[in-house]
Amino acid sequence: MMRGQLKRIACILMIALLTVGCSSRQEPQSEPKLLLGFSQLGSESAWRIGNTRDIEDQASKFGIGLMLENANQKQENQIAAIRRFIAYNVDVIAFSPIVEEGWDYVLSEAESAGIPVVLVDRDVSGSARKYIKCLIGADFYKEGVLAAEYLIRKADSMGLSHVNIVEITGTENSTPMRQRQAGFMDTIASDKRMTVTESVNGDFLKSRGAECMRYLLDTYGRDIDVVFSHNDEMTLGALPEIENAGFVPGKDMIIISIDGGQEAIDVLKEGKINCVVECTPKLGTELMETAIKLKNGETVDTEIHPVEEVFSDEIDVSQIKERGY
Ligand code: GYE
Image 1 (cartoon, rainbow, N blue to C red):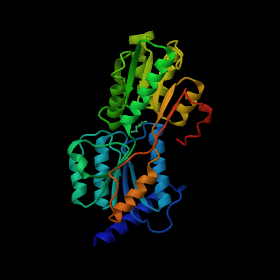
Image 2 (tube, helix red, strand yellow):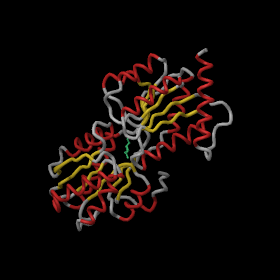
Image 3 (cartoon, rainbow, N blue to C red):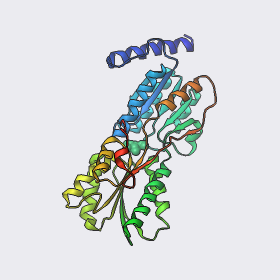
Image 4 (spheres, helix red, strand yellow):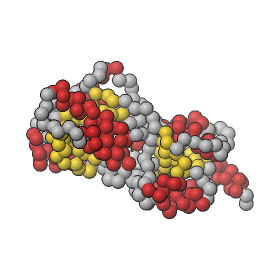
């Protein structure tokens, strides 16, 4: 059977499966423009769920057939999904790599099959990078810088002479964990007031954020001046622990978070979080536009970074619009 015929059958099968699985969704009426395989890394946060929803919505808006697989936080599931996309002979593969290392083999297989690969949200490291056509995601280093710059301004305004920081980091060896940490550390390095007492790994999960915070409070108690948390989910897990230990978050401790999901913004408005650096999950439009260009053999930008802002107690928080995730 010809390659084109195989793809037609794969498209029809996939749409039939999607229609059975999600009867309430609006499916494209005609044959899709192209078939996109997307491996999402999991559902660990409001950010991630918003990102998945946006990609589904934009695929249906652009008339693109989407084969979506959720890896439930396991790299081996992502590798298996990418191999299935290759076997289906999709037009374009996209994925959000849970960690940076370990992609060389499967990406070389995609290249041998002639299928272009796009990264969404996170990066891969080293030699695997040569297989990637485009990375669509936030500038995580800048997010770390913005978090630290806020802290420096806050310390100035409060007249603090010494600042003890605890850091709750995201998934080890993931791009946002590495770069948010690097941007933050590089920016506070020259400020003699700042000390990072300890960094603990919260894996971007609410439950782990709570666990990490309990440990940090048991160990350092009232010596903690600042909690820098790599995502909203972990922050939302940490806050009740701080309150249970008898401290007022946002007053006794400066709380800095990243993402900007609705729940965290509501808590910022209550004054229990001081600063949230935005990281938008809405990457679907850029992904669909890039996939169409790749299918048509056009050149694409090698990196696309969305514009992001900072929400904090320095602005009129009542003006922050609905976040949509
Ligand atoms: O900050 C976090 C999610 O990779 C940018 O992953 C993403 C991060 C996001 O679980 O909430």
